[in-house]
View: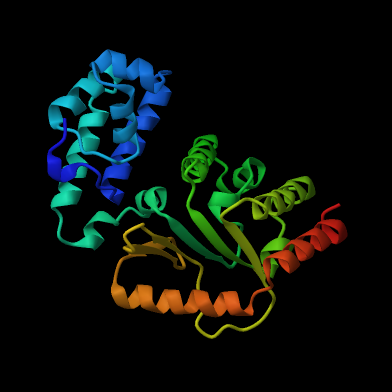
Length: 267
């Protein structure tokens, strides 16, 4: 199924393919054992593919596609995997930041105006996105990123985000309660930045770091945002995030501030 040189390698490209297989399998209502029986391999091999521990061949990807009735989606994902592995330019692979986010071992987030999409409740997301399809896509993205094994996530959120009303008062209370809940999860560190001037911080941004230390950033601009893997951009953003963390409240004091805002403003 895989060449010896592929075995045991755990790369962002392989994990991206594995996540796609897992998503299609779950959509088909199959567990790993049932899929393994359909394509005549062991359950362990299906697990290795889904976890990005091995690279399957095209013929096996084709068999998976048929078993999952995926209409070519598995084969397309396999072709994208091969092209990503062939690419010698890291930036070419990470033109799509959500893919980098899905396979990251560490995500760092700085938000200036709204709660980051990974941490939004459905009600909060609905007030921003309006379209039910867009909301469903965002909730699905959350689930895929936060599913076990979830990355470590460090967040610096400007205090003004807690005060800016998005949706109803009930939506805001639910959203802030959810932030407190998330802040207690293993691997999530949420800090609130008081209203202070941090010279380097000019816009919201995310940094996705892979297990092999490769990085990509998504930087918000006036109309949308740009993805960058430029070493200079990443060096500057890493330094900026360190400055933001230094100025922010610690995790416990951040929780206390969120609770205070809930009690005083959103009840």
